[in-house]
Amino acid sequence: MKVLVIGGDGYCGWATALYLANHGHEVAILDSLVRRHWDAQLCVETLTPIAPIQYRLRRWRDLTGKDIGLYVGDICNYEFLERSMLDFQPQSVVHFGEQRSAPFSMIDREHAVLTQQNNVIGNLNLLYAIHEHFPDCHLVKLGTMGEYGTPNIDIEEGYITIEHNGRKDTLPYPKQPGSYYHLSKVHDSHNIHFACRIWGLRATDLNQGVVYGVLTEETGMDELLINRLDYDGVFGTALNRFCIQAAIGHPLTVYGTGGQTRGFLDIRDTVRCIELAIAEPAKQGEFRVLNQFTEQFSVAELALKVQEAGKDLGLKVEINNLENPRVELEEHYFNAKNTKLLDLGLQPHYLSDSLIDSLLNFAIKYKDRVDQEHILPKVKWRA
Ligand code: NAD
Ligand code: USQ
Image 1 (cartoon, rainbow, N blue to C red):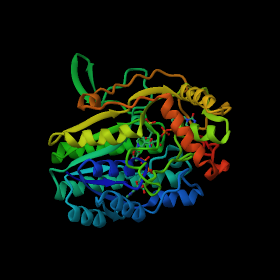
Image 2: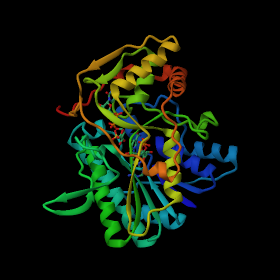
Image 3: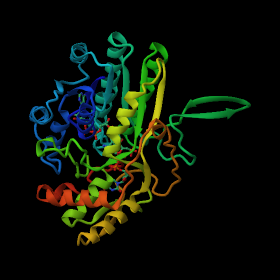
Image 4: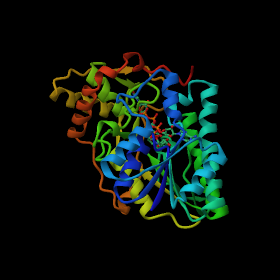
């Protein structure tokens, strides 16, 4: 299948583009490279030294003989998006290309506006491009589990059946997101759902949990193919951050009590979920929603796991409960469904001691690149 991977220079997108190319798909990457620009603005670098996208792709071709196309530009620019899609003629579009950090979106008004403009307008342009030129193309859009928030009832996959005053209907599940970033995903979901209803587009919204890990079969082939691994207080995410903190002897930064529970998955499952979603597209007019995570953990549980694994490697790992910079529930009910991807054939890589070990060892290998200045959170929700 011809698959366009938007955001293919990023953490999930790079691993996915290589995985799909390795599994027989014809792949092109579209990316504005803006994430590299935001890193530079924040003066942060990923733990791993990532090569320029052109070098990455050349190395991939040299190693495998497979070509991955490249379109460098912003999907908020409709003419560029339309031209690239007409050139590539995709059958599926996987859309990872957004500003994806909650803290980044909460820095100030400017960053909130940037996040919502970039995400909502880029996604809307994509809906128009598909409608105008590729009405049969399947859109696979990365959403987030954080769209649901932490309601005091079970979280379903996208929809909930409600009985009210003697009548019954199946409706989109209520959304209570926790940042302007997470809100941008809710706006995207509504726009996609609407486009499916009025134009008959086919779309899958993948409500992904927090991703951890760095190595996939393909990104581990060569140093030039290495994936990014963020550890800073803006773009770094819970488990990845904890492993890197443990590697450099920094106390683990648990926000508040650490009772915050979220869905998590290994990056090797991210790439497989995308493959499964592509292989069985949503029907024409269908807005399909799949919850993409394999296990749920509290942040405190993850910190304890890293502490345990660290012991075996001779690391003395301390856990610090910091004042929570976010506004979020620290003790709450969380029980989210995630059966639809399993039904499509996902065989999860559950979080194991060996995965934490390998992530710790990976972090130790690159620990000299860590700038301690960027570990503690600086962005507050109530600044
Ligand atoms: P990332 O920042 O590593 O990658 C995103 C890529 O999109 C970057 O290369 C960036 O340059 C590109 N991009 C951003 N805006 C663009 C635009 N307007 N036009 C073209 N390219 C653009 O992020 P990631 O961690 O790979 O996340 C990918 C997607 O998955 C995001 O939509 C994110 O919300 C979602 N997601 C990520 C996680 C996670 O834990 N990393 C969890 C759940 C959902
Ligand atoms: N947390 C800590 N310590 C840290 C970092 C985070 O306790 O050092 C806590 C946060 O307060 C939060 C939880 O861990 O309660 C998750 O935070 P995170 O930074 O790991 O993840 P989040 O901000 O939710 O965002 C990430 C990705 C985003 C994606 C989301 C999936 O950056 O793109 O949408 O995970 S989800 O969480 O399911 O919404």
